[in-house]
Length: 244
Image 1 (tube, rainbow, N blue to C red):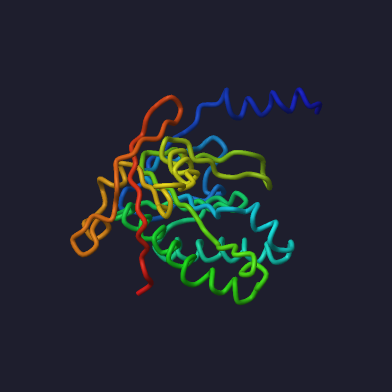
Image 2 (cartoon, one colour):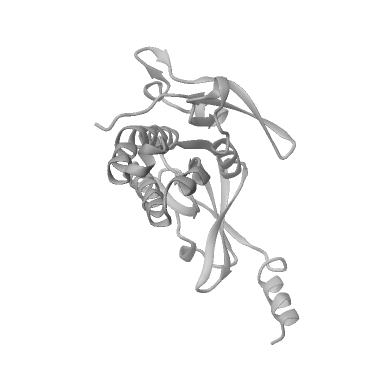
């Protein structure tokens, strides 16, 4: 079969074939894998997305050899994954120095926010000291591991894309895109130190225990971000969440 015929065959399976969409039960914290979906199937879910990015990868590359840099990448991604999964989040994507977690079911906003705050605590108080102990050159260069997290909630369509043996699950909706955009914000000037940002919809569904600390609101806002020609409000915080 020639390439043109193969392209048309794929269009028959995608554009020209109606997708069957089912809704996920709100009470369940599970998230399907790509292999759980057929190529013409989709799953509509209400979900909270968390993107967390490692910052200053270029500075790391300049301060450390390739093997040491790889160890830092692995430490950040592995610790972030462990924290997200400990709060019933599901990892469905890695993109270089970024990890995406999906939270569904009851308290999904609380669990996503707690994950982001625990990642901040782990990065500042556990992972960075370990890195400086094991890789003294990074301490000498005053390179510190830093991260930025973005969180947003909304109705999202999960679908399977690609070919057998080389496919992935894609998330279609405002929430994953907004979470990714919020994680891209690099705090500078008066924004320095604020590494967790959440959409207004997520903030509105947080319990008081995830909004307040000793009676004080942990969140500042609202601020505005433009995406796709539309404006979205978000909140930011400097707070972390220690391990119990």
